[in-house]
Image 1 (tube, rainbow, N blue to C red):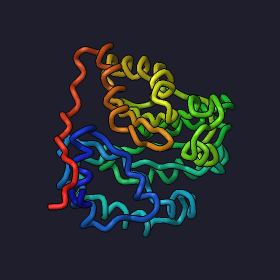
Image 2 (cartoon, rainbow, N blue to C red; image 1 turned 90 degrees about the vertical axis):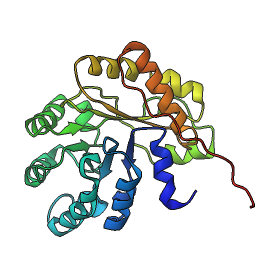
Image 3 (tube, one colour; image 1 turned 90 degrees about the horizontal axis):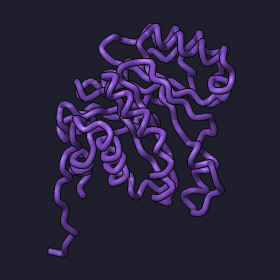
Length: 260
């Protein structure tokens, strides 16, 4: 498909997307305008802050980069569901004060979500409470990246072996801090294993919906070949428990490329 049509096709399958490309570089404003044009106003973008801010500057002294990023994504308007602060594994409980100061300087026009990867936040109760308190006071969500199913057994494909060396190994966390929790779930290239492994999240997300929360769930596999159909299958599993759940859009029909 032409670049200007790909997101529109994706958005006919799902109603949210992870903005991972923004981690590597702030996009041109014209590109973001195209994203907005290809999606409905209610479509959700969870957009990652650039690594220059989170990993290189470690949230300090990055005012110019932050201003440029915020200006670039402004055309998303209401589609900007959350700005996603993914922190490196070296960002530890001793750095929470830096995180708190950074979050307090952010404009109130957006909602924010933080993903941490240092194991102390998951294994040390005091560190967990510290981060929860800081985020809770500011109505910022803690994004869990659940890789427990992925690391349950050795990799069996090239994609799994590649992910094995890159994905974080932290305990599963499933407590929401706000009314708009965000979950990232990584399964395996084996669909059966992926589906069996998300049973925990089907229960958690169903309960969040009953509580009046608005969760967003991203389903990954190492090769992501079936990510769209898996996302819809996850939605169906939740809808079976929460009958009033709004349906996903109907996928737009596609046809194979032709020579003429």
